[in-house]
Length: 395
Image (tube, rainbow, N blue to C red; front, side):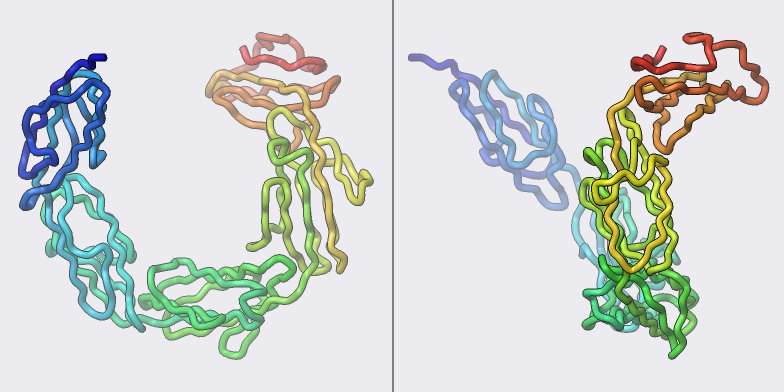
């Protein structure tokens, strides 16, 4: 049995080396050859050229023909980082290929906060603790940390009942049990969000011994050190299912509070007894909303269902069924269609509006011309009433 031989011509451009070394090699057809690189002084491996491309390293070559491959090394740019004050910068100093985007993150220590970045002598204030540099030259970067004001937020009822989110949320900070502390520059506006676990609701915020019932959001202006607490209490859970599954539709909640869980076609939220909750069943293309079910019984056919939450947990199902799609096309900028019935859901695809209805539905179409246009006729149906017994098609 004989196997054909192929030639590998391996070259280098720039300061660097390869293993095997640059040269000409003979291999049997079908052999695999692994080529690795080592960068020279102030250079980095960039990419392959010739009969190979990309930047994989090591490179595996299958010798199914003669190959001419060159390893390209480019002179890199130095990134040098330093800090003033108490903090750290990551990543640290290093050599980067031209055009590389490097994301730097400044992490303060203690009661310090990032005040500004200095890049090659130019100051960038209020740019945030994360910044992205384009390595188009050598760069010397300093993160300047100054003393700031601390904001401590405590969950009085324990982490199993809920948590507190910070915005802005910078790198750093400290967590001690159920208390989280962050440091901010003077006069920073911070928005705290109380996120309840399933089965719990926000009870109250507290600051300086005063309770506040301001809802799940609490805003703080950092003009001094601040300490805020939040308490959660047990509530009533409302669980909804989408039938047959989430591809048929979704359910919107109003009010929609932070927290809760959602997994595929099941969603659970928690509310205070006495809350008026509006649930909206929103169909997806190819399905229409049919009815609501509770305990196996139909309780309504309107896609918008209002529920007065009491002390008993509630489980509801929104039932969607396959239907026929109606495509309505108006040339861009010339107008739109109003439809009746107009159920929650549907999509816009280019100049088409797409809705879904049950078989034998009658749909009223009302063309609404844009300014400067007048309605002439329906190019496809020439009707204002459509009796849907089969899918319409876009034209």
